[in-house]
Image (cartoon, rainbow, N blue to C red; front, side, top):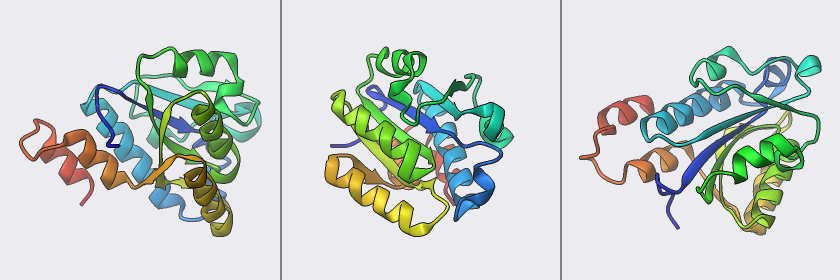
Amino acid sequence: MLIEAGRAQLLVVDVQERLAPVVAGREGVVRNTAILLDAAAAHLLPVTLSEQYPRGLGPTLPEIAGRTAVAPLAKTAFSCLADAELRARILGHDRDQLVVAGIEAHVCVLQSVMDLLAAGRAVFVVDDACGSRRPESHAAAMARMHAAGAAVVTTEMVVFELLRTATAPAFRDMSRLIR
Protein backbone atom coordinates (compact mmCIF):
# COMPACT_ATOMS: atom_id res chain seq x y z
CA MET A 1 0.00 0.00 0.00
CA LEU A 2 1.21 3.49 -0.83
CA ILE A 3 0.84 6.54 1.37
CA GLU A 4 -2.05 8.68 0.13
CA ALA A 5 -2.22 12.41 0.91
CA GLY A 6 -5.98 12.26 1.45
CA ARG A 7 -5.70 9.41 3.96
CA ALA A 8 -2.46 10.28 5.77
CA GLN A 9 -1.50 12.23 8.87
CA LEU A 10 1.91 12.82 10.46
CA LEU A 11 2.81 11.93 14.05
CA VAL A 12 6.09 13.32 15.40
CA VAL A 13 7.00 11.68 18.71
CA ASP A 14 9.14 13.40 21.35
CA VAL A 15 11.81 15.22 19.34
CA GLN A 16 12.83 17.21 22.42
CA GLU A 17 15.75 19.31 23.60
CA ARG A 18 17.10 16.90 26.22
CA LEU A 19 16.41 13.70 24.27
CA ALA A 20 17.70 14.62 20.82
CA PRO A 21 21.35 15.31 21.73
CA VAL A 22 21.90 11.72 22.87
CA VAL A 23 20.33 10.09 19.80
CA ALA A 24 22.66 8.33 17.37
CA GLY A 25 22.47 10.12 14.02
CA ARG A 26 20.65 13.07 15.57
CA GLU A 27 21.32 15.44 12.65
CA GLY A 28 19.71 13.11 10.12
CA VAL A 29 16.72 12.41 12.34
CA VAL A 30 16.08 16.13 12.86
CA ARG A 31 16.65 17.02 9.19
CA ASN A 32 14.36 14.26 7.96
CA THR A 33 11.67 15.09 10.50
CA ALA A 34 11.77 18.70 9.27
CA ILE A 35 11.38 17.49 5.68
CA LEU A 36 8.37 15.39 6.72
CA LEU A 37 6.79 18.43 8.36
CA ASP A 38 7.34 20.49 5.20
CA ALA A 39 5.82 17.70 3.09
CA ALA A 40 2.85 17.47 5.46
CA ALA A 41 2.29 21.23 5.12
CA ALA A 42 2.51 21.06 1.32
CA HIS A 43 -0.11 18.29 1.21
CA LEU A 44 -2.32 19.61 4.05
CA LEU A 45 -1.76 16.55 6.23
CA PRO A 46 -2.87 16.86 9.85
CA VAL A 47 0.13 16.92 12.18
CA THR A 48 0.41 15.83 15.80
CA LEU A 49 3.48 16.51 17.96
CA SER A 50 3.98 14.79 21.30
CA GLU A 51 6.35 15.63 24.14
CA GLN A 52 7.36 13.11 26.78
CA TYR A 53 7.37 14.75 30.21
CA PRO A 54 8.48 18.17 28.88
CA ARG A 55 9.23 19.52 32.35
CA GLY A 56 12.07 17.01 32.58
CA LEU A 57 13.00 16.47 28.93
CA GLY A 58 12.43 19.97 27.61
CA PRO A 59 10.30 21.23 24.75
CA THR A 60 10.25 20.10 21.14
CA LEU A 61 13.37 21.26 19.28
CA PRO A 62 12.81 24.74 17.83
CA GLU A 63 13.74 23.56 14.32
CA ILE A 64 10.86 21.09 14.52
CA ALA A 65 8.28 23.14 16.44
CA GLY A 66 8.91 26.12 14.17
CA ARG A 67 7.78 24.19 11.10
CA THR A 68 4.16 23.86 12.22
CA ALA A 69 1.55 25.94 13.98
CA VAL A 70 0.39 22.84 15.85
CA ALA A 71 1.17 22.95 19.57
CA PRO A 72 2.79 19.81 21.02
CA LEU A 73 0.77 17.76 23.46
CA ALA A 74 2.49 16.61 26.65
CA LYS A 75 2.33 13.02 27.86
CA THR A 76 3.80 10.82 30.54
CA ALA A 77 2.78 7.47 29.05
CA PHE A 78 5.22 6.12 26.51
CA SER A 79 2.57 5.41 23.87
CA CYS A 80 0.83 8.42 22.38
CA LEU A 81 -2.41 6.46 22.32
CA ALA A 82 -2.25 5.87 26.09
CA ASP A 83 -2.80 9.63 26.56
CA ALA A 84 -6.47 10.62 26.16
CA GLU A 85 -5.85 13.97 24.45
CA LEU A 86 -3.30 12.58 22.00
CA ARG A 87 -5.47 9.55 21.31
CA ALA A 88 -8.48 11.78 20.56
CA ARG A 89 -6.43 13.99 18.22
CA ILE A 90 -4.85 11.10 16.33
CA LEU A 91 -7.87 8.81 16.06
CA GLY A 92 -10.32 11.70 15.68
CA HIS A 93 -9.22 12.37 12.09
CA ASP A 94 -10.83 10.54 9.21
CA ARG A 95 -7.28 9.68 8.14
CA ASP A 96 -6.37 6.03 8.65
CA GLN A 97 -2.72 6.21 7.55
CA LEU A 98 -0.13 7.35 10.09
CA VAL A 99 3.34 8.46 9.05
CA VAL A 100 5.41 8.25 12.24
CA ALA A 101 8.76 9.85 13.09
CA GLY A 102 10.49 10.54 16.39
CA ILE A 103 12.56 9.36 19.31
CA GLU A 104 13.26 7.06 20.93
CA ALA A 105 12.46 4.44 18.33
CA HIS A 106 12.53 1.52 20.75
CA VAL A 107 10.37 3.15 23.46
CA CYS A 108 7.79 5.84 22.65
CA VAL A 109 7.77 5.37 18.87
CA LEU A 110 7.50 1.58 19.15
CA GLN A 111 4.75 1.61 21.77
CA SER A 112 2.78 4.24 19.83
CA VAL A 113 3.09 2.23 16.62
CA MET A 114 1.98 -0.98 18.30
CA ASP A 115 -1.09 0.78 19.69
CA LEU A 116 -1.85 2.39 16.31
CA LEU A 117 -1.71 -1.01 14.65
CA ALA A 118 -4.02 -2.44 17.33
CA ALA A 119 -6.42 0.46 16.59
CA GLY A 120 -6.58 -0.65 12.96
CA ARG A 121 -4.46 2.09 11.43
CA ALA A 122 -2.01 1.66 8.56
CA VAL A 123 1.35 2.74 9.93
CA PHE A 124 4.41 3.93 8.02
CA VAL A 125 7.42 4.28 10.31
CA VAL A 126 10.07 6.55 8.82
CA ASP A 127 13.33 4.75 9.57
CA ASP A 128 15.64 7.70 8.84
CA ALA A 129 13.45 10.10 10.86
CA CYS A 130 13.48 7.91 13.97
CA GLY A 131 16.32 7.55 16.41
CA SER A 132 17.54 5.87 19.56
CA ARG A 133 20.59 6.33 21.74
CA ARG A 134 22.05 3.08 20.50
CA PRO A 135 21.91 1.93 16.87
CA GLU A 136 21.07 -1.64 17.90
CA SER A 137 17.97 -0.40 19.78
CA HIS A 138 16.87 1.48 16.65
CA ALA A 139 17.43 -1.58 14.45
CA ALA A 140 15.54 -3.88 16.83
CA ALA A 141 12.63 -1.43 17.01
CA MET A 142 12.37 -1.19 13.22
CA ALA A 143 12.45 -4.97 12.87
CA ARG A 144 9.81 -5.45 15.56
CA MET A 145 7.46 -2.80 14.13
CA HIS A 146 7.85 -4.28 10.65
CA ALA A 147 7.10 -7.77 11.95
CA ALA A 148 3.98 -6.41 13.66
CA GLY A 149 2.65 -4.99 10.39
CA ALA A 150 4.03 -1.47 10.10
CA ALA A 151 5.66 -0.45 6.83
CA VAL A 152 9.21 0.76 7.43
CA VAL A 153 9.91 3.56 4.95
CA THR A 154 12.35 6.40 4.32
CA THR A 155 11.78 10.13 4.14
CA GLU A 156 12.20 10.09 0.35
CA MET A 157 9.60 7.35 0.03
CA VAL A 158 7.11 9.46 1.96
CA VAL A 159 7.83 12.60 -0.07
CA PHE A 160 7.46 10.90 -3.45
CA GLU A 161 4.44 8.81 -2.46
CA LEU A 162 2.64 11.98 -1.38
CA LEU A 163 3.59 13.67 -4.67
CA ARG A 164 2.80 10.70 -6.96
CA THR A 165 3.89 12.61 -10.08
CA ALA A 166 6.55 15.04 -11.25
CA THR A 167 3.72 17.33 -12.41
CA ALA A 168 2.41 17.81 -8.86
CA PRO A 169 2.39 21.48 -7.83
CA ALA A 170 4.73 20.80 -4.87
CA PHE A 171 7.21 18.68 -6.86
CA ARG A 172 9.96 21.31 -7.29
CA ASP A 173 9.86 22.44 -3.66
CA MET A 174 9.76 18.88 -2.30
CA SER A 175 12.52 17.56 -4.57
CA ARG A 176 14.78 20.44 -3.44
CA LEU A 177 14.27 19.41 0.18
CA ILE A 178 15.69 15.93 -0.30
CA ARG A 179 18.80 16.90 -2.27
